[in-house]
Image 1: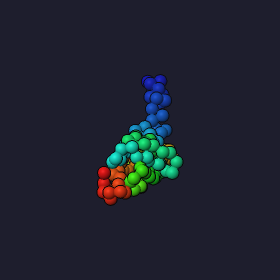
Image 2 (image 1 turned 135 degrees about the vertical axis):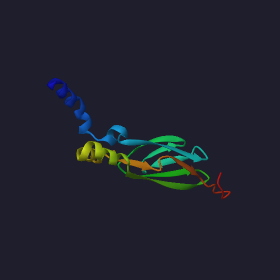
Image 3 (image 1 turned 30 degrees about the vertical axis):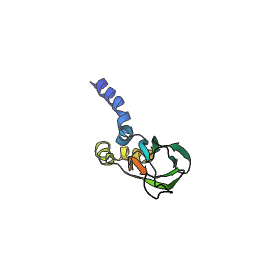
Image 4 (image 1 turned 60 degrees about the horizontal axis):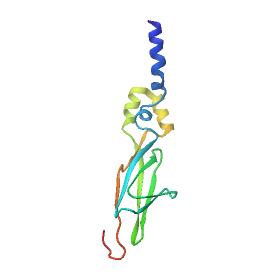
Amino acid sequence: MRKIALLLIICLSPVYLCGCATILNGTSQRIPVSSEPAGAMVTVDSKNVYATPVKLRLERRRDHTLVFTKDGFDARTVNIMHVLSESVCGNTLLFGPLGWVFDMCAGTQYKLVPDKINVELKNIMRGDNE
């Protein structure tokens, strides 16, 4: 009986040594990004540039800024905010403070909002949405 109890403790200890949000969410989140018209360039945090449509993998622990550009269209900026995820409450109840602290350090206690982005770019020449 002691061997079984020891085996259970060993098997379950990784679950208790990491937080619930880390297990469920991970440290990054996929955000689908599209534009009207398609093919706009989106610059993420003044660093990486992608063509729309694209699925971005963004770090959960901080805010992000997306800048959309396309020749003949006004540029648009979209801010993605990191907010506390609902998993924090469950994590604290199930795993206690240790799991929450682990999630806080890993940045997995957050979710990104909005979780999907579609930007309509305004045509400079016509002054309307295209």
